[in-house]
Image 1 (cartoon, rainbow, N blue to C red):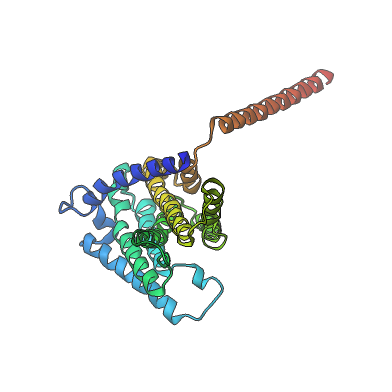
Image 2: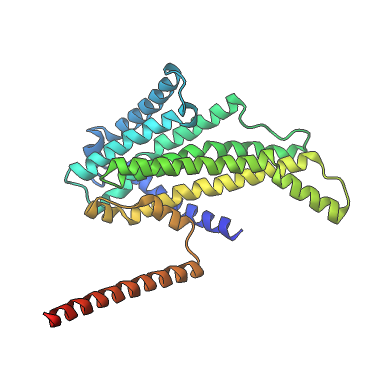
Length: 316
């Protein structure tokens, strides 16, 4: 529960900071941003057109290309959108020579419309494909589990595109950034698969509640209640995780923007993980002890080397 509260706090901080950035990027004043240097003379129109073109291109790619190994594992409209915006951002940050520390708000906010569109399309697609189903034989109020799970599943694209664009943008070495992103995305998908397996195949909440009802109340557990508990728990965990990924990525990118402009390199995924799962005092102490031992070992080695050199000089 403490973990969920922390994730919710991270998400809230990020989304609260995001709203004024979006207003700044899409207000009528061209004097508080440099959108024209990234998207041309009509930047707000260009942002919407580029977003639409990337999404349409992704769907076209899915429909015209033959099946291959990872085709069904990737959201291609999101992938197209993320790559195109990352290229535009990188060109401005690393090659324009005009980027400043005040540019984060409007630059990051420019991808929000595309992200919202992808989430809405995800909801529509999941409804059409029947990915989410309401609980059978349950009371009317169990219907709330359906939109909750539908929204949670659809928000995966928002989290993925947020961390992807950040990872591909916050490094001059885009090859290394792409490899790191790919590895982390594989882990990301594996964790989500395991979570879905535990909730809907193993029906972990169903089993827990069944045992509690029978041992404490001595009554048979209604079948719909376990399904409803699994659905609500799964949706809550997914939403907390996805929103915290988005919020944490936003906050880390803001905090490290100056470092990016100065050095051209920020370990963005590592920083996001640390913000979402901060080390405990015990872990910090263990790390401090490890570093102290390493420093002591290096000092002893240096002293031994100096003594050896001194002895050799004396002998000569």
